[in-house]
Length: 260
Image 1 (spheres, one colour):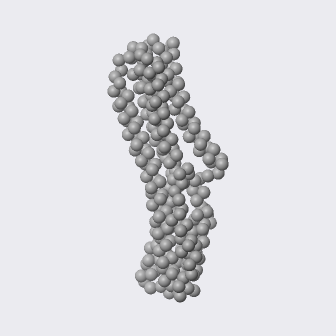
Image 2 (cartoon, rainbow, N blue to C red; image 1 turned 120 degrees about the horizontal axis):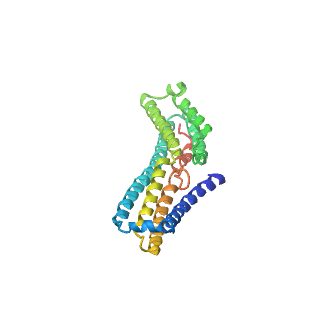
């Protein structure tokens, strides 16, 4: 990420945490305000089980939300492995050909791999590299071109086409996953459930403002930890970036001369 992106990303994270504790202060002030304290004292018989119920709802929703975010990261890693596997299959076919026939295919794979690695910083912005896209198209033209098809058997043609399709499909899904940032409606639901949890904690501690404040701060800390963990993982190509290493490892194979 660029400095501006890192600043915005960090600022939004800090803003969310500050907003959580600001909500604690706002609820505490409203409940203990001289204008409202008299009327709210009538609610001292609220059952503590209310906190458990709402807290359980918040915890379950947060768990499902975090699981959805982390599954995106796992799928992104799977797509990277599939893309590398497809490109490796193309190299295997190229290495089985005479050097003068397989060399253009090996070169096309190497150039695309280099462009794909250089594309990685763009994925944090949800963008792709036009150069990498064009080089993959060039690889496709070489792999499926008539000049190469006439030198291959039916089995080799099928293997080459299958591996090329796998690499193209994996790249498409990898780019699609780089644009996932989490549903704003889900973030809104997390914020609402967190606020309701803090409010319920405050209402069951109306008889002691010190216990009320401490309990709310503890819950706010738990909410902040959950929020931070989910936010930092909301895109697999931002803070904890999935590695392009499986694709980069192909450079060593693509530099080897194809046997004659």
